[in-house]
Structures are given as structure tokens and as C-alpha cells.
Amino acid sequence: MSLRAICSSLASLIVCAAGSGSLQGQPVEVDGAFQVRYAANLQTGGEAYVDVINDGANGAPRNGPFFGNAAGIGNLCINAYVLDPTEELLSCCSCTVTPNQTVSWQVKSQILSNSLTGVQPNSVTIKLIGSNPGAAATVGGTDCSNSAATLGATVTNTFSGVTDTALAIGGYIAFGSTLHPQGTQYVTTETHFLPVTLTVQELRSLTERCAQTIGNGSNFGQCAGCSVLAIGAQKQ
Image (cartoon, rainbow, N blue to C red):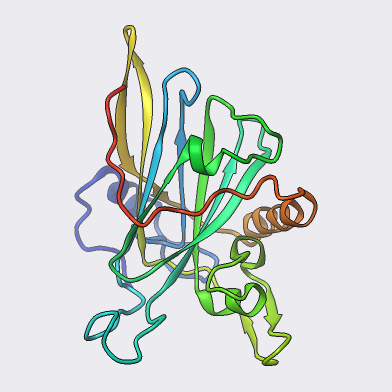
């Protein structure tokens, strides 16, 4: 898939200027595999939101999701990694997003409600990586169970013996809101996540730290599942 012909937004302009270079050797695109944003003033201002749309780039059931044997076609795992200002991974989790579906997270009440350190900082970095759900199902029993930790790994299903590799793939658009101080109040801005280059080193750092969190965090550091709906930003 090539870069979009027309760059009509700030995110698109940055993508066009950045050129190519990703883990799979493909151009970084508006709906690329690795997307990044921040959320600020979480404690002083209020809630922030993340909305993710599966844009159908990986396929979709031709006759709709409830006609024939269409289950799983075009599904994506959206793997979320949230880091505090000192680079500590506070939380990681994943969410299954079907073609043309929009899902959302509330940053404070869902993503950070069960942070590894028990602390909710005033600002965080949020990183999203898309992946195919097939390999995740071989280790977790559901489409995207633990895929934030197994992404990039080759795993074998204990029962079926099927070996598969979870690959980083694009095909989604993400939006995020954050709060900015304006006088005595806070105002909300909502923008695209920016697609950026995913290196092997970054992928390993995120997934291995997520695996350690799941393995040794006594259930802390695993964020709550996403909601199957879009959340609009509100003025605080």
C-alpha cells in the first residue's frame, strides 16, 4: 500500500515529510502499525480519551459480519503501551477491533486504573501497535489475549500444534484527546495519533516489558479492556 496521494492534515504532512522506514520495510502511513500520542493534565484537568477505528485495510466480510462464515476476517489487535514521564511502562493491554468498528479507552479510568506502580501521573505517553490476531489466539485462547506481550514472537498452540508469528500491521486510525489549561479552566483538544517508524529495538522493549508486567505484576499493570463505542471529548 502506498502513501496517501493527498496530505490534507498535519498528521499526513508529517508522514509525507518523514518518508519511509518501518519494521516490515514499508512506508510509514497514516494508518501505519505504530502510532504515538500523549495525554496531559490527567490529575489537574480531568479525563482523556482514545478512539480507534479499524479502517478495513486488512479486509472485511463481503456480506457483513453476520452472514456466512465471516468471523475473524480483517480483525486487528490494537496493543496499547502507556509510559510515564520517566519512561516507566505503567500499563499494557490489547483490544480486538473488527473491520469498520470503533473502540475506545478512557485513559484514567480504564488504561491507568490498575497501573503497575499504583500511581496515576499527570501526563503519559501512549503507544499503539496493530497486529494480526491469529498468533495471539494460539497463546491466549482469545483473539488478542496477551498479544501486547507476544507481538513479534513465534508461538505454538499447545493443543493444535499450529505455529504462527504475530506481525505488526497497520489498518487503523487512532484519535486522542487531552486537556490544556486556559485561564482557570481546561479546554480539550482532539487530534490524530501520529504514525511513526517501528524499530526492532522499540518493539522488543515494549513487548518484553509488557511480558514481565503480566508475568510478575500480580495482575497490576494490565489495563482494562476497551469499550465498543466512540467517546467524544468534552470541555472541562
